[in-house]
Length: 278
Image 1: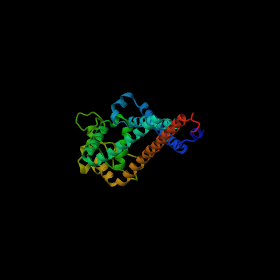
Image 2: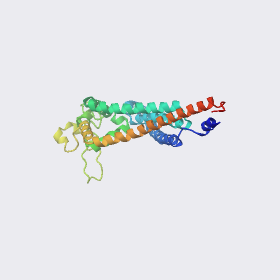
Image 3: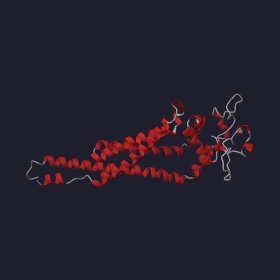
Image 4: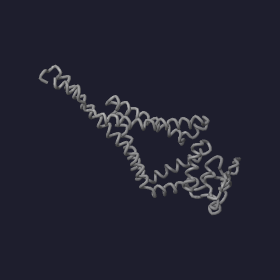
């Protein structure tokens, strides 16, 4: 009778661990819903042909993909912790561990193969330049980057000739022929109104003459220099992303161990329930 009472009343599963893991997942589940909503909204308000044109560089698609993956992962964590389901908890733990290891691997490879990483970034920037006018989100992202880093184009301002609207060939009928976006322009704090035509015809000028009006250096070098100058900041961000993942892995492992111990206790209790001396 003593064993039965212990098996019926005692539990290895900690309520604190169980609900801490649950609320941990609820927070990130809510974040995933927000990401998906923003991504879907951004896609819906675009024209279908425009959305398909820049699919591989569309920030809205990236938000949706990250949001869906996070939603599925946190769903496993929420239900697994609430229902004390070992299968869902193990799925959550394994997926979180894989994501953490992939992030770690990406950081190491990015550091070891920095030249190849630079080439990949160059390809992405050049592709983004090509689709600049076809995607409003991408356009805003590029304009923001060029303003913040005080740069223009990939390697140089003449890279904007890759875009069909800014292309500098003589047979280009565009009104923006040989121009660069206004985000390349040098701006004074005294300017009350932004001159969006300040980049007109800048690609026809040499570096010295163009440099009077626009930033002539490309964004790739500026981005690389910024990364080198902010290694501690980037390390802090990486640590900030890693800590929640490690917490989730730890809590899920603890809860899985507790559930297994509880199952063993219940099994033992059932086996000895008929034993009056148990």
